[in-house]
Length: 217
Image (cartoon, rainbow, N blue to C red; front, side, top):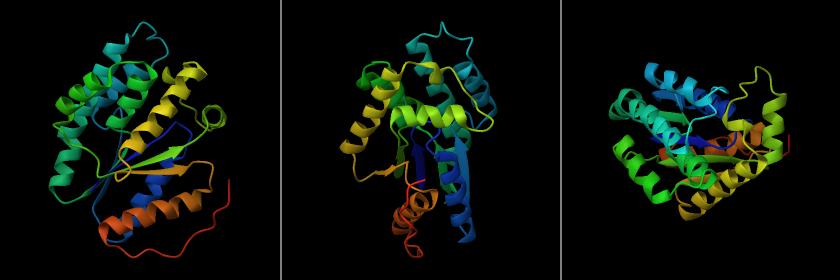
């Protein structure tokens, strides 16, 4: 099973990936967690270019091609081999980030991005995409106030850009409700974790414990 996590930085993706990975591993499943851009030596080098504050002259077309190059490397070196062995892959971001950030955010044509993405991924798509939604201002505030902040080139964009990205994610989820699980990132970590477990357990035929509290953080 290939599961991706999407949402703004600060939404809790890393925490939920770590918790889901541990939960599945305890049940004897072969789990691999990775991230985009990155996850390979070449991908990490591309990530440094993409997120560096000094690269302000990077044009939108070059940006999407760099993201796609890192993704192609990740698919071939990490994702495809692990899935071929019957394992589970958890990825912090994947192709939907391109549609949200470069498509809806930058205004690049979605049809062009889809063709580039199919080429880069060899048409591999997630079985499940978990989107942790946050109001734009709250997401940016969380990132700014977090420990060991990696405040990067993408976060320096105007609030209007991030709002377009959020709107794009919600439109993507609305078009494929069977693949997406949309959760309110303001809910408690425990509650979000439980909702993710329920969905994944249902897909894999696993038992899951009772409902966690539904309080807000």
